[in-house]
Amino acid sequence: LYPAAHFPRSLKPRPLKSQMSSGFGARGGVGRCYDFWLTFESCAKTSSPASLCFDKRDDYLECLHHKKEYKRIKEIQKMREKRESGADNEEGNH
Image (cartoon, rainbow, N blue to C red; front, side, top):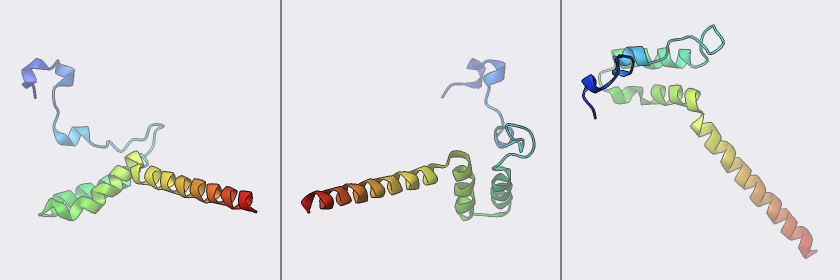
């Protein structure tokens, strides 16, 4: 959006490699998603169409953000609420 000259030195865009996972966890040691990153990175380096690596990328992003997990938890909670409200209605009819 903006030319690099408009960014302070610390905010200038960096090469993609330096923006990716470092491998260090928040509390030291190896990060919890680093293995997923390595798998995705090696696939991206060796595969010609990048689409071959979408599953590995999705695994890495899921490890970072847990979006699929949270979505599934919400679905289960809705099903449970629906089941419990249905059980309440049945008890009231007797």
